[in-house]
Length: 166
Image (cartoon, rainbow, N blue to C red; front, side, top):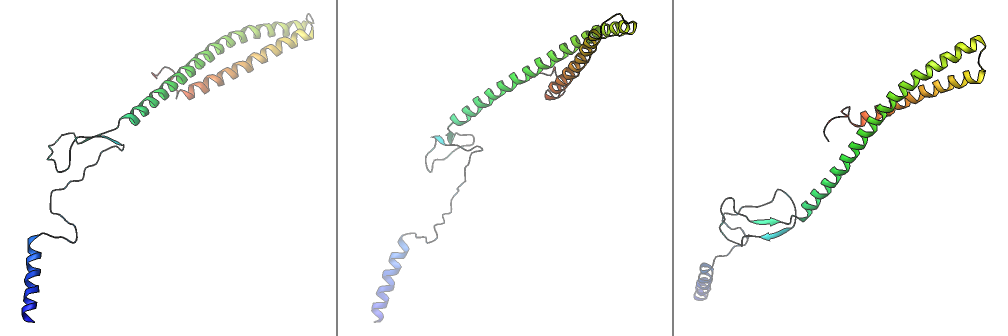
């Protein structure tokens, strides 16, 4: 029996010392995790397993197509926004011009109304001409208030800077 135990022990010793074996799968080696700053599909792998690499060497390339599409979409949106800004600027300039014209019209309509008022007091005009003059003046005043509101809205949409570059 002791001979059998010694034979089994020698067999076990011979088999266990020839090959390295690990049960926990840990390897002592220089292993470095590599990741990209952006996500995406790897389009090209420039190195192979266990290849020595140098600093600055290309390891892999990420597919640029999704990023190129995103840039194109952003450029298109920028174009739309620039057009909207130019439209707002045009609306603002138009509202200012129309306000100026309405102001000049109010001056004329005020004189007409004043003439009709004086003629009415003297009994030299019809009541309807006086009413028309009053109505025209009131309409012009409401119009100028509306135009000022339109120019204020356009100016607010332009962040108070109608001449700023787009």
